[in-house]
Every structure is written in C-alpha cells, then in structure tokens.
Image (cartoon, rainbow, N blue to C red):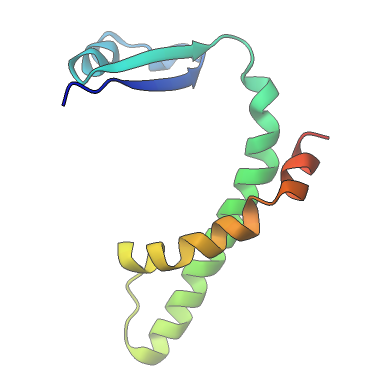
Length: 102
C-alpha cells in the first residue's frame, strides 16, 4: 500500500533489537521512542487500563455463564465486538480519566 505507520513506545532498551528494527523497516513502520516520559503516562496504565481489564474479564465471565446455559461457551471475535462498546463506555469516562491524572 505504501502507507507508513508510526509505532510509539517507551525507551525500554530490549525492544530495540536489530531484528525488530529490520522488521519495522520492511513493513514501513516508523519507530518513535518516548525518552524518559513513560512515567507521565503511567496513570493510564494504573487506573484506565486496569479498569478496562476488569470490565473485559467481567464480560468474558458473563458470556461464559450465559453460554453454559445456551451451550455456547466460546468467547470469540464476534462476541468481543458485541461487548467492546459497553466496555469502552464503562472505562473511558471523562471523570475516570481526570481521576487517573490527579
């Protein structure tokens, strides 16, 4: 396609292997490292993404419980797409995002 993509990551050195850089070059992926500022983004990981994981796990458990009654216990991509909107609405609220950066 000729489309370039940007991959933003922290400055953790183990990511930058020769193989990884070559892989990215071959696939037109531009690497951009956030030098020593990943700690500023940590509130997202601690609050937002932990909450996201909580609601995601809850959705899987509910789907399996319902599936055990209906005979369909496989949580597949279609079921994921069905619940992802609810998970995002529960997680990415302005009040929660503001709380994460307090």
